[in-house]
Length: 274
Image (tube, rainbow, N blue to C red; front, side, top):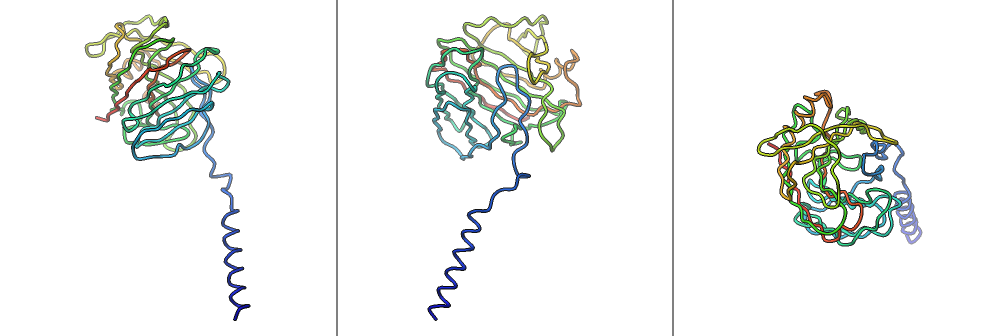
């Protein structure tokens, strides 16, 4: 009797050991990273740990994300930038506060973004992205605080020719800037009007790896509260021939591009699908 019981226990332990040592096949690994943008290098491929709501505080020397509902809050500290990056996300992911000054590096050192849509590491369609250019109905309300430092607040919109499946391959980037400090806006020669707001708009190719066309909207009158009518901005970019209806809008993020300083900056983003 005792021998039969001992044999059963040993068989159960062998089964547990087999389960514990089983590895994920290579085919289940995340897709390759998308091309880098104009202001940050390729991000690490990982799926942020989702939480339904609450506050998230993070200090890290590496990019780190937290999914809160349909939003992803991204502590986007660039590789090689000096010191850690410390942020607090709150209001169910709609608000981020930068808790520590950034030291100057080579160009922009952080873009701690409130993100939604499809990225290599997350995909939530709640706010209507990804979607073909002509079918986008997403808008964005943003609010931003001011403070010391060298930074530019902008929404960062990524477009690709990617279908419903497959790795992302971004071919266009569009930034929509509403407020800045210590920063001289890039030359954008065309003046356009969307609703009650005027924008300077232009486009140019980025340099280095991951080259793509960068489309830039700068408000003619900087404001810390803005409403980005994304479909109207896309129509203007299409009218200039910079994008086409064959492209897909994958994602939108909002944050200050920070060159140095930025401690205490607080900003909110409220996307909506109409």
